[in-house]
Amino acid sequence: MKLGFDKKERKSKVIKKIFNRVNMKKEIKKENNKEGVAKGRKKVLSGTIISTKMQDTVVVLVKRFVKHPKYEKYVTISKKHKADSKGGEYQVGDEVKIEECNPISKDKKFRVIKI
Image (cartoon, rainbow, N blue to C red; front, side, top):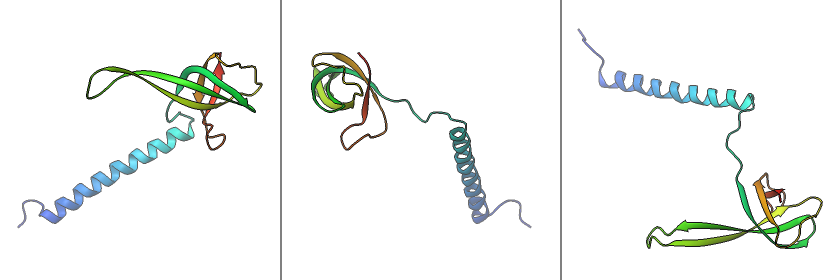
C-alpha cells in the first residue's frame, strides 16, 4: 500500500502547476492588450535643437547629468537624437521636448511635441 506520491508523480504534478500558471499569465496579458492597456510608457526627453538642415527633421542634443558608477563623480552625458518635425517652425537653439514613437526612418525614432 502506498501512503504518498513517488518522486515521478510529485515531479509531474509540480510541472503541471507551473505550466498552468504560465498559461494563465499569458492569457491575462492577451486580454489586457485587447482592451487597449498600454504595454509601456513612451520616453519623453528635453533638449536643444542644434540642426534644422534636413527636411521635416531636426537634430536635438539631450544632456543627462549622471553619477559615474566607479568614481562617484557627476558627469554630463550628451546624445544627439533625430526627431520628426512636421511644419518646420523650429530654429537652432530652441528648447524642445521629444517623444519616442515608432521608427519613422533608419535614424528617426522621436517626434517633437513641445517648444
